[in-house]
Image (cartoon, rainbow over all chains, first blue to last red):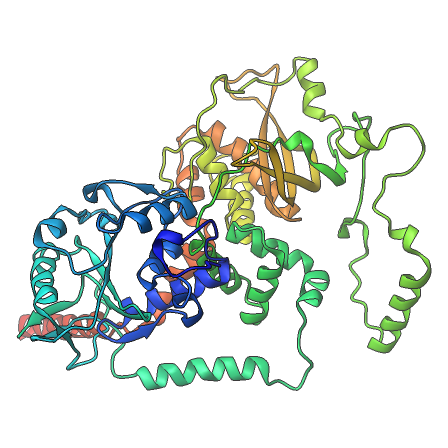
Amino acid sequence: MFNSKSSSEMTHVALNSRQSSLVFRALLQSLASPGETFSLPAELCSAVPARALPLLALVDIETTFCAPEDADLELSVASLTGSRVVAPELAQFALCATPPSHTFVSRLQRGNASQPERGCKLIIGLHPDVAVASVTLSGPGVRPGTTIAADSQLSSFIAARNTVVAEPPSGIDCWFVSPDGRLVGLPRTTRAETR
Amino acid sequence: MGYVSARGGLGAIRAAERLVRRLRVTSESSWLEEDQILEKLRLLVDRVMGEAGLWAPRLAAKALRQSEGDATEAVHLLRAYRSTLPRVSYSEVADADHVRVVRRIVPAFQRVPGSQLLGRSIDYTARFLERQSDDLAREEAEKMRAGTTTEVNEAPDSSGHESDDLSRSPKRLLEMLREMDLVVDRRLTDDPEPFDITRTPARPPAPRSALLSSMTRADTGALVNQWYRNILGPDGYLHEVTLGEVRHGSLSVNVTHPVTGESVNVTDVRVTEVEAIEDLEGIDEDRTRFDVGYGLCLGHNERKAIAMANLDIACHRDGGRTQLEQSLLLTTDALDSAGFLEHLKLPHYVTFRSMIERKIAVRKARRRDDD
């Protein structure tokens, strides 16, 4: 286990298989029920930055990732998992500490009709802020009436995300992770309308 | 095909899941220990690991308990779990000549290099259902445990003719046939990367490594069925098959230590290995020699390894003339076939309603024509 919550101090211990499975299960469920809030394992969130957990559970020596705004964390994850750091255009997984810009989102891989699995999995750190908009979700697995509160940065991201999921089955899948380990999934199949 | 997602029945679905969980653990009998499954159902555990493509005996035992003995479901659980594990390293190439055998038979040849080592096999037991009472059976088991361990020791006979190393890693019949120049040599001179079926689905025409990998992870029953169909002749073949080697033993799996660069043992896996000798008699084949098929799978599963070895050479000789390769690559995986079959239980309301409407439309059209 990690012994420090600071990404700069994450040293040479990765998740064990049980911890990895717990994180994987939460990620899976969050994509099956978009917009609903799930929790990453509390004992892990107290030891590492919660937004790093999806990467630590999912990437390995055969995958690529990037965390361009999080250099220390990027280095630590690469060192712990053996995953290769690449440019956003080549990344199978991407991590952003805050909702990324339209420019960044447009650089991510979307896959194509025959290989939709090549679409990037994007993890976004969220910090509670003043909600200025409500995003209404609909689509497979979404409970009717599901909404998520969004600040201006998140609203802007949702608009960018909608453009890259406009041609299914290609697109990107997203997870929002708060510092305390709350998790919300937004797969490419979900329609998100900001009001 | 049109499927609809199951909506509106979430409560019923969750109740069904709870029912399975509750009845699995609340039966009258005592808790089924992992050790019991590992020891008493060892062949089933081996089969599940082989079809899952994961060497993890305890997890396979857990999966069998969770699936209530449904081997295909246990394979599903293990393979799903495996898919969540990160790859932390690649193992070094393991040489099958380094298998330490606990059983080795050579049906093709009496005087083989090394010993015939019968080991633990039901091949030599009478197929009588033992119907004595549990109490008596327990009593007998206690007696055996107490006094006759040497009787069931897996060591080869200690006649003193061979060193332990030789008897545990005996020379192959194939080597002897090669020395006699009786085998077609198909060994590769280069060293291509093996095809990874866990990353890319194998489609024909596929390299031999893809075919072997697919068969080693295939459903045992499906593979035996393919072999039987092939050997009986519906596909146009009648084979003269002889088994050269049937081995069961343990193989060391090593990785290179990332810091020291030393080779480090991370586990030992048990494997079953088979070499099947095929008599070549085709007009375009070398009739002065034999050819050899190869089979290897995790655990002790001779039926599977034998079918695999025979199908390996059958596929080579077939050379794409029939659909054998396609059948092996695309129809023998337990999860593929069972998954497709079981999806039929999902709601098909839209497709079936559409079929009904077509029938009614056809009927109406006929009536109009009749009128």
